[in-house]
Length: 290
Image 1 (cartoon, rainbow, N blue to C red):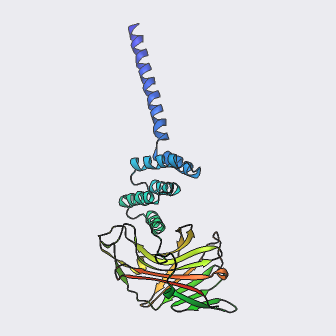
Image 2 (cartoon, rainbow, N blue to C red):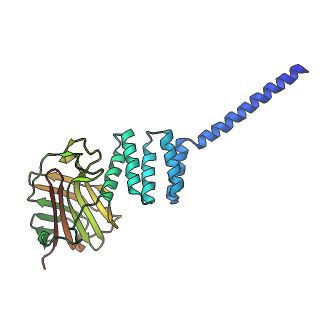
Image 3 (cartoon, rainbow, N blue to C red):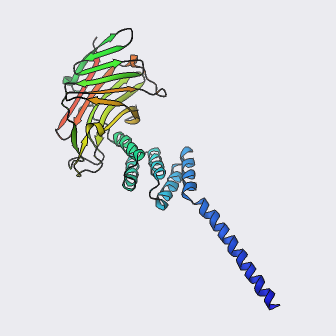
């Protein structure tokens, strides 16, 4: 009888251990990074930012090399209106994943949104000395906009080549200077395009992610992008082709179909040049020659 009791106890212990391990396995599965990411992305879609952030941060704690978790957390912070926190979590992700193109692109996007270019003087209005006029010439196959130091060759209502001339360009520039603020724009050559459908920006620029590091960056390795203006900031909507000479910079691009735009409605161009190293800051506003 005693023998049977011992066997029964052993069977019960084995069964209990099996049930515990099964339950533990289910619990671990529910808390796996993949499950947490799925939950976080679902909460983000539902605009439940607090719950989404909890899931993404748990993934980062479990898997510090998980790129999707950093990107998800950053997008969640943006949804919560905290762009500084979004940049901070992306910088944490970049430290863990220094070769992540997705994280670098998001840092560039949010860095520009946090530090949009200053397009006016302290009165909020462009300086009178920086006002220019442009002439529009229409032919059968394109529209040409010409002005002092600015040329716009419109190919169709969404595509163009824009050239800034009469400037001085070098092949490379000192970046991450000690004088730069964290994530601040250090160099920028760009044109903001104003029309009936809002404003767009085509530019080449770079940001100070590690002030004091004093790197050298080739202008060809900087960010060449098209941005759309959303309220008081800009969002990156794609890359553009860039070429340059010692005295001009050229961009060729097409505004994606999902964004409302038509070059025929453009009423103003604004050229912006900023060079922290050489202490250059230029804003030129171009309006039609009436």
